[in-house]
Length: 170
Length: 102
Image (tube, rainbow over all chains, first blue to last red; front, top):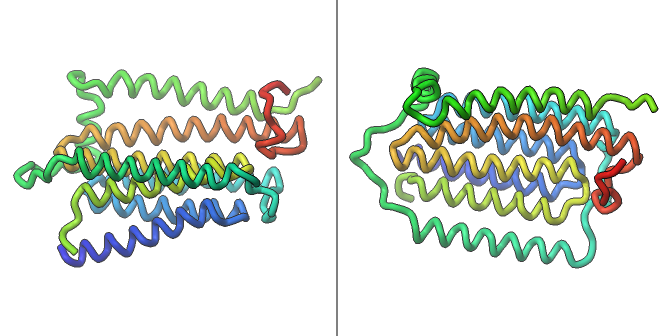
């Protein structure tokens, strides 16, 4: 357990550092690579919590597919060079920092106040492909309908992306 | 340093969410804003998985999977919109692009 907790603190520090880099870096490509780092750290957290399927999907879908799409668009639009004008100027920066600090404070407060004590006797839940599949296709649970709706959503996404990205002839 | 509980994961998730919110507030490049939104979605996913484990239920992981599917569709559409705006205006500065009309 002690090694486990040391690993958590190291990974959490790495994760927060990479997340700060996503925001602070002026180069969009470096932001994207830092975001890949965040997602790899989160994947390790998922594996550590027994959510193997979510961790694997996190690596494949987020770090693999979505971030490649981001990098592809950055290269396509030629935005790879750092641009000093790409941060907002004036009042919006301190306002954003203040609002986010308030958000963090309220989230931490809610987490500290409303958190139920840890249930030690609870049977550990595992997130293997088998468990996820049984839960997903169980007619007694709400996930089956959502799963079917997701297929429609992804179809709309594919068609919409093709329509939006095609060159207009007029 | 005691054992790692769900509270630790929730705290980490809150920090990541706040960092993403800062990025959405201060950035003018819509692609970086998108990345910050992804960061916030990931933070929410971490909280969902941690609470699912905390409550001994698989529902948290199921919701995280659906969030990922929605995020994938959202990125495909959003980046398509950005490419389309860039084609018609030659800029994607978020302060210049204040109309959805082409």
